Image 1 (tube, rainbow, N blue to C red):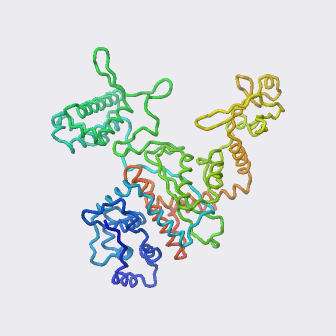
Image 2: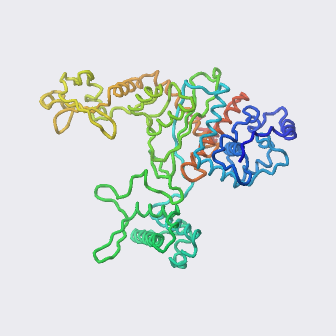
Image 3: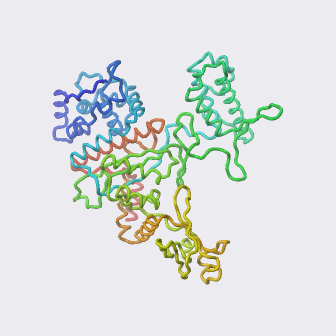
Length: 567
């Protein structure tokens, strides 16, 4: 691949487009080419392509095709066909009427190369840089972020189906790679009856006893297959097949295998113990599918899904719509495993915004992103004020609202003393590290607490003394200040600005189908989210340049009736 500049739109294509849309608004691809020109240069993707071999299609133009594909929610076949038969796409790509386009499989190859070389975010970086040049984006101001769940592009499997499908996937990969070896290792006729069709396509037993027996049978077959793969006479490269390694992990996570004194092998399913565990690894390590090793099961309130989590950040303003000088645009996309807490993602979001030169002054978030460490650290490291409701004091005293909460105690950081509402002074001040976070445990004397008339309102500890667990000074003061602020009417009025991100998430789901991943694996799912975000930005820019509002989300007739009755 040799980087080349995009050709200008062919004169005959340009004339046809102008003639067809005379007096009407031209399509999005035409607007993008006229306003932004060669947006994705080939040189930006050069490292993902070789300099020798057959001549390939322009990666920069393939990037634009992928963005337009997301904007119109097309499949690869439909996108390749659009390149051939849509004049607006030909105009944007600089193709002539006689250009045959490319085979749809080129798009999959392009995504694989981009993901393999870590260039998923390149298109968003390039768009952001161009918009900064045009004054449509700038550092400072306000931004908001929220997350939503994304379902993986695989079938949901329970533990029994997962074990069977892992054996089937490994057997399919081995049969494809070395059929003669499979024929010599297993009884093809009997194994094909169980592992020929997908495990979730035939009726599983309803009896728990039969399910347990089938689960053990799956495990025995899997261990037997791995035993053959790792036998000294088998080709060593068979062990490196991804499906074989997935089978090893699935069996290890779900089964135990021991040998009795008599030499008999015992295979058991990992089950729940009296302590509440089941011997399996924690959720963030537990595989949920042999076909997408990055997908994880997770739950949030009443939602239970298998897949990922998407975090969207966009600019926003509290100014009236008539006074706005810029549209609201997406500035960052983060795709994580579904088990990663929102608060763990925020530092990476701020770091990426800093790299793009788009750090806001104020960042509006929900309570899932807020911790004392982040509230203080965001100001200290990036100069960002987090506008977010922090979790209230969860101590029994604070919940009952009748006792002495931690905020009722006076802290003297210089003398390392705390004074309770009854006037008693703490006796110990011990720095500790809890879950990797430095804290200070402050204790009062039992001789002061036992005779105190306020003891029932203060503590019910068996040691008959009150203890406080404090963050470092700056964090504690930031946390207390945030809790005080969020009780005011002005703060709540300002915080209402955050709710606008829900509309952006709805737009992403409606326009680009973001709720369900198109591809498998975290890298390609993130690539999909990045290109979808660029598509949404171009749609918003098109509306802004043509001075028309964005299309509203479709509303059912029943919902309209409800709004009418409640108005």
